[in-house]
Every structure is written in C-alpha cells, then in structure tokens.
Amino acid sequence: ARAAAETSGITQVVLSGGCLVNQRLCAALIQGLTASGLEPILPLAVPPNDGGLAYGQAVVWSWRGAYPRADYPKRDRIA
View 1 (cartoon, helix red, strand yellow):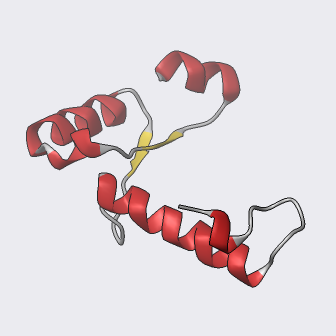
View 2 (tube, helix red, strand yellow; view 1 turned 120 degrees about the vertical axis):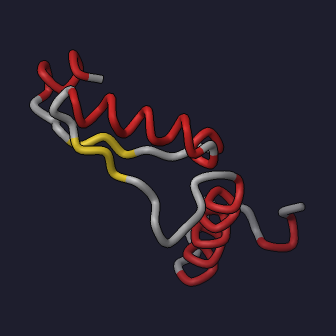
C-alpha cells in the first residue's frame, strides 16, 4: 500500500471486508498503515462484512428501481 501511495500520491486507504470483524487483525492493519503514513478509512455506519455487501446491493436495487434504464433487467426477471 505504501508503494502504491508513493506512486499515486494517495494517502487514504479504504478498508472493508469480513476480516475487519477480527479486532486483532483490524488493529494491526490500522497500526501498520498509520506507521507508513497512510490514513485508514473504516466503515462506521455499515458493517464491513456481508451485512455491508447486502446493504450495498439493496441501495443499487432501489436506485435501479428509481432510475430505470432500458438495458437493465426487468424486475420480474431477477431471481
């Protein structure tokens, strides 16, 4: 991450995924990123695991319903 940050100039790292539920792993990741001069961004309002994925899917689904396009599948055809 540090090498990519040095090349791109980006200093923030967005973290997500089920591994962040593990407090030891999450703390070590935050400590390592911070020690490298990077700013970790953690999910606060939505869980980092499958709950966040389900939330994102629901948001996309509701957006598609509000702004339908001809190339999107019809609602009755989605399982």
